[in-house]
Image 1 (cartoon, one colour):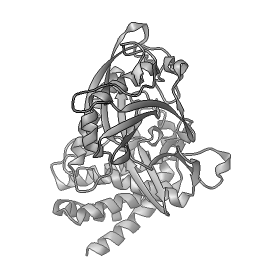
Image 2 (cartoon, one colour):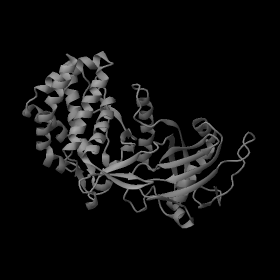
Image 3 (cartoon, rainbow, N blue to C red):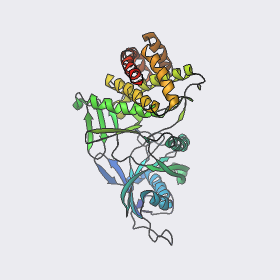
Image 4 (cartoon, one colour):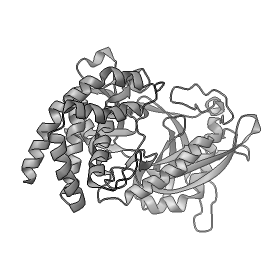
Length: 410
C-alpha cells in the first residue's frame, strides 16, 4: 500500500508494491483491515480519516495526541517496510504480503496483528504501537521487561519480542507525533476471557472472545483451570529474594489470554508492564516468608477482579477462581522447589507457617493487600465487601494444600 501523498497522514490505496533495493526488486504488498466480530473489513477513505480511540471504550475523541487511522496505519506501513529483512529472518522466508489488522485500542497501546505471507507459509506477528507520552514510556519499558523475563527460567509464558523502533506522523492540527513500536510474537489461537453478565451464559460465568468463531461461554470448572494457570505464571516469575514480581496486571485489561483445543486449556500472559518489588527487599528467612505470603494474598485478591464483559462494571469472580489461584500458586512453588535448593528451603518453612496460620493471622496478611488499594480505586469497594469471606475460604483451603505438600516433601 502506498500513500497518495508523500506524508504520514494521507489515506491510502492498495498498490502492487514499490522497488525497495537492488537485492529485492519488489516490496511486499501491504493491506489494511479493521477487526469486526467474525470478519475483517478493509479500511476505506472515510475510515482512514477517523481518529484512533484512546481507550477501549473511547470514541476517538480529540486530544493533544489524537491521530487518524490513516496516520496510525501509515506509520506501521513505513515501519514494517523498513524492517522487512529483519521480519524475513523471523518468519524464515521471503515475504510477499503483509496484512495489517487493527485489533484493539487502549489508553496506552494500539496493537495490530500482522499476517505475514512468505515462501515459508503464513505467520502472525504483532506490532505494538504507542503514541501518547505515557504510552511510549510504558512500551519502551515493557519491551525491556519482556526481554528480561525471557531469560528467567526455562519455560515461556510470555510472547517473544524481536525488535523495536520509532516513526514520526502528523496528528490533529498538524501536530508532530512520535510513535514507538515493537514487533513481537502473536500468540496464535489465544483469546481474551472475561466474567460475563450475559443472561444467555447461564451457569457458565466466563466469556472467551474468539475473534474468529464468536464468543463462547465456559463452565466454572474450566474457568478454575484458567485461573490456576494464570496464578502459576505469576508465581513462576516471582523472585523470592528481591520480591520482584510482574505487576500491575488486570483481567479487565486482557493481560491473560486462553487457548482451548481438544479439551485442553492453555493460558499465557501477554503483558508485563513492570517487574519490580512492591515491598522492601528480604534479608532474613522470616522476611522471605512474609514477602511470599503478601504476594500470595495480593495474587488471590487480584485474580478475582475483572470487568463484566471486559468493559462493564467491576466484577468479582466466584470461589472457583480462588480455588484455582491457590492451586496454581502451590503448583508453581512446588515446581520451582523441585529444581532450586533456595526455593525449596523457603517453601518448606512457608508451608509450616501456612499450615498453622490463624484467621487473625490471615486477616493481618490480607490487610496489607486491602490497604494497597486507594479508597477511590474502582476495585476498592468490591474488595472491602468480599474480603472477609475471601479470607475465611483461604483459611479453610490453604492448610489442606500445605499439609499435602509437607507430607510429599517428608
